[in-house]
Every structure is written in C-alpha cells, then in structure tokens.
Image 1 (cartoon, rainbow, N blue to C red):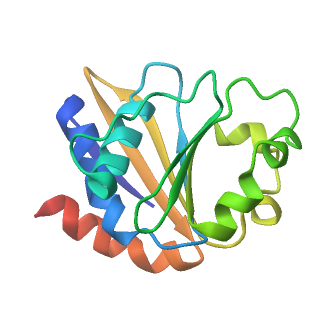
Image 2 (cartoon, one colour; image 1 turned 90 degrees about the vertical axis):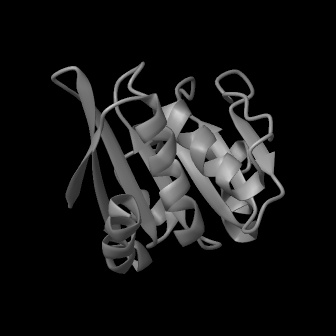
Length: 157
C-alpha cells in the first residue's frame, strides 16, 4: 500500500494517466472515496490516456456504465445508484471483464467478496481529504500487487 499526494485536479488526472498504460484485460480499477473527492476526474484521466485527449468522458452516474473501444477496451461503471450487488451483472460487469478492463466508482456496492465478483487482479485507489489536498492510497492484489512499484515509478517521473 502506497499513499500519493494529489495537490490539485491536474494531479488527480495525472494519476489516471499513470495507471492507464499498466492496465490489462480482465483487470479492475476500483475508485473509493466520498462524494467530491475526484473519482470521476481520475477516471477521465485514465480513459483519455487510452482513448485520446479529446474523448468525451461523461460520468456514468445515470447510465451506470459507459463503454470505450480502447486498448484494452474499458468499461466505466458508477455503482452509486445500485441497490443490490447482483445489479452489476445485469448491466454488463461480467461481459466487460471478459472483453477488457473495468473502472468502478463506488465498488463497495458490489458487496464483501470482490474476488468472487471481479477476479483476482484489482487495483484499489482510495481518495481522502488531506489538509487542503487529497491523498490517494493505492493497493493491489493479483497482477496489481506487482504493478504498484511501476505505478509509483511513473508517478515520480
């Protein structure tokens, strides 16, 4: 587990840009934190790093999911409005993982057994308030346990 200081919105976007080239099919990036912490900003940075800087990246708050034909393909889920973990399957979570990678805001809506729902390869980024700035605590399991060091190297470049 590593904590990175996000001094402003540009730093939050940059973190997404650093994560993007490390992402592989079948992996999940989980964005955790209260409303207004920058989860959607980080998601936009990641998706635009894969799709191009002019890609329209709306928040999927009302549609619940947006799909992007990037390499790897990525699906951006906002699970804030889910009432039951099973609803994630109904909106295509399993298929999205089969075809590419997933980026999930509000992952706690999936329940307690994330390994069963998402598989073994997950990066969790928890964003919290930190005295006028924000801290992003990053941790990984599966393939991401070995990628954290490269993420930190990319962040420090």
